Image 1: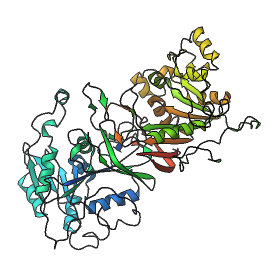
Image 2: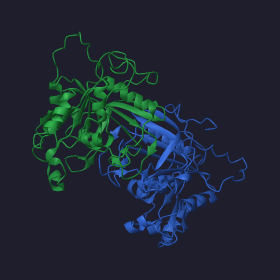
Image 3: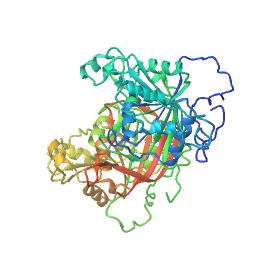
Length: 292
Length: 292
């Protein structure tokens, strides 16, 4: 963190790797030095690595201080990214609700991140009543960019018009063309043919002027990014752990297993530059993915 | 912790709930005030709550400082308890290897905990070559008490004689007579008919003069004790978390799920009086199970 910003009185010590604040509008944009945005992967789990008691179940895990940290991190990124499952389950606002940010005492929409929803089959039923669009109309947030697949049925003209009238848009990208390996083909994994390529997604976001993305969930998105093929795209990891066990059957964060040249399982991923910050009853872990 | 003991230079701040040190041999034993020993449940996991990459695979998770803490905790308990799966996989020593403890500079076997192995079907092939008995012969540890079921074929007379010649013994206890519920019966869960009753096991250990037990694993033992039927027997929990994801397919700590009166899943367990201690790259979590 190069510049001190207010994160509220509860967050005096947290120092995750986060991007520099965006320049003020009067600062000329620097030439892009990377074709991809800075990425922070962040989520809260139980001790048994569950995000929720069941798919679609909103589960209170982290305490108020951790939630405050999340909003602070949102203020430091140009975009927030989630998967469509989370969008449908939570009807989320995906804005930043801390004092001093646009809509919360700040000018215009300063520091409000752009919501990004990965929705390969365009199944999110976004309506004028959706919380995310209501926040746009009350000048407290930005409209989402929704990433779909070029292979799905495009959203109706009405849906596109609704989203565009709020300042958002649909963006269609080519999905991954083939299942990545034999194992995946054998599993006939649902949705594999609609899976998006992370480099293409992030490259697209950068081309939209978004220099930093905070990736918040849900389980499929997180597990995909922690897997060996994508983890190199993650610049910073911030995990909140709450001192509870949700029990078997929840939505679990655990990447696909990795094996060595002899087919023996080895750890899928490890963090380096690790810092642990006790925060209320939770702990916050900040680190970077260690190179494989 | 009522009395300060040496835990080595790396452990200045750890204050889990642990029992008072055992009285010196000259102190008369107090009358027992509880029929059960003080119990500490302790283990190390990855961020995805795995103890190991696969059943039987020894997996380096925690760093040297966390290992040092484990030996400190061992010195503060009368007994260490593990399941037979861990005994077979690890050929463990189950002694305390810190300076000042018996066999490591201390007199006799002072502070050496009694190893307890839960082995309902008496399948552990304990031999004179087993590390745990070699340590007894070199005056660096105590021989194990092995808890079997009254329904299994007893160990051979030779095995019993070998164990007793080292100062250990087999103890047969009645297993749980029936599967606990319909779900368990339907699953035909392997070994359910040999499952031990935790209250009976702990009561037996107390009757053997053991006033405190540190329970170290493996997965079946931990998940059983974190479940709703047994968690009330645990006095203290100490979990080390390493900043790595092992990936799917490991040996996972996650208790059976718990449901409310309407069949809706609720958190299985939660800790209270929580303290988090960063220790090297790991974090150590100390707490007590919150009453359900």
